Image (cartoon, rainbow, N blue to C red; front, side, top):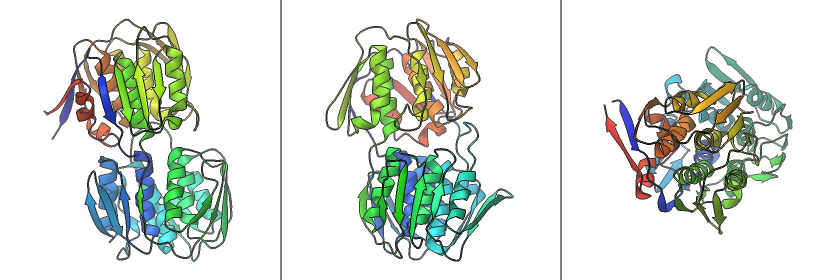
Length: 419
């Protein structure tokens, strides 16, 4: 059944909200559970569609799964004999490709259909394949399938041509059970890579350097079970910070890691937003007009590409002209076509969006094109005068846990209905 989200804008968000577990960590640690020779339990997983999809895939591979959404996921991988992920399953999320590294480490072979996920630009997997081959595997993409096989994974030096989160994670998964030592150069540094390393180490892996650009992995013949809680969601935290600023509200976001938000915090402060933090909480409030700022996405610890879309929605009513440069994904400005329907003044030139602030956005029918675009439209709807109708809201469900309930608790007029 088709659904739409209805937002009546103009309400300042006020109160306290708690952040869910991290989506980007969840989609890495769930495949990693296949590497264990004993049951593992993961806590603090977000109740989102990407997690549901991976749970279904593990079951299809033969693993014994006990899943209570919002509480825990326990996986006993010992019965799992499958090594193929179908096109239908892999299309449900981009992170299905992490099963290649996990299955290579588990059984030395993987056959996974090319992943789905959001259409935000070219996301080639050549660096993934290069990494697997550096460990002694044969790997290729052909006929819509990614095939990888090896008699025995052997540690080696992996040199990435560019910083890539996905390939860093995939090689970490495979290398955790390779013979010898693997060194990943030009590795990504994102918080969820550190969290994955901590999870693997909790299972007995030997990984050092996660969070730096050189990661060393000493492969282990066997990994044991553990219980692990994933870190809070960095991007949900940022989206809620932006929503609080956009509505000129006063919101305390609890259960977050303020250090992960420093790039966004710096830009909000530059705009004139008041941001303060404690050990595990951030307060965001706005007392005056927002100033235009320039934003350029970068790999961590720079400004996250996943927050570019909500941030650019906020900038549509900032005083002055903002320039947003997207360096990661070339098609990550589709949401601006929709926000123009709400009265925004935006020009896109290549990978740069020039945003001239307007006094007011106005509610209009808009359509979500990808996960973070959906978050941007929610931010725009909260800012706008009148009613915003957001179609295809299921994209938002891929990465945000119960977003309507959280925003309603802060005073937003937001609901979902079947059409």
